[in-house]
Length: 483
Image (cartoon, rainbow, N blue to C red):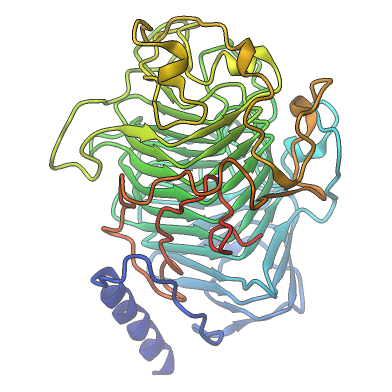
């Protein structure tokens, strides 16, 4: 009876949270909860069906796929460490609630691997190989909440389809290598205040649902290709206050692939992108190094800090030498995002090639990114009124200009440092008070997406942080990314 009462309470909280008008308030954390029966860590967890609660501060060893059936819930309490062996996955057909805390985060890792610092290449760093598998959420997964959780060394090759053929949008057995995958257009996926370290391909693949991807740190994602947060299908939500360093290709991306249910639409704001786009071995200019909007998707892209990335905000303009399609730049009043819009983004580069792509050019295929007068530097003024979007320009005079003044990170840098520095290490990417990025963002030009995203300490978002006036993921008032 107690179990039924708890589940009933969870459903009630979700219903109340979905109707909440507190769009930007942060929910105060509550005591750890218990759903169902405790799961023992006395022996290795073998492949099978699981539900109940992994208990706080315990270590579990997993040797086969953990499957959560439709209608069941697996809850992971704070401080849990899960050692994933034999390339094991979480197969989520029900609900997964992972509630780490700032003082006691959850860790899901491959115990054979250790994090490294300094120079990192796809050929030498095990972060790009994939140790354990991923968290694969099917079209009956209604709610996935992951907070204050380390997801380290995921992305082992998927050996078998986790869901029946026909229920799988973007997975291939023997090929797919994602850390997080979600495909329920009516479901909710929350990833907040967490860390993703290492992946061989895209760190995430989303094919529908409502998302709040907020205040996370992503390092070393993608070996010789692959995106960070890759949203496809009819996915809708926010990607904000994330620090993405050393990604192979795009840091954040939208594309309406694999669906007829609607457009992929995201508000991407107050993110910090550092050293992204340099391990992609594909056609230069066919992918971005920070933000990519393509294939009939829409986005709001504001207040981002983009440092030593291969490309700036890239709005795809049509098919060319690679498989990239026209972004949706038309107006539609009924859409979550009526029209793709962008501005108030900050750029810094240490070489001319990067500076020549602050406004991406049509070097491999058409793009339609317009220079913005609100950007730093003011690219509309730099390129002049006669500039036609997509044309190649000389950005060499912008090299080394507008140092964002991180608290601890060497700018300017030389010797292609940005190509191999792919992890945070001991650096501090917060802004100094005198930073030219401080106070230069907009808090009024757009609003985050709130529809469909429940706000709740346990069964929803901990808070949809509104746009911050300081560009990037760290705010001088202490809000934003907490890592």
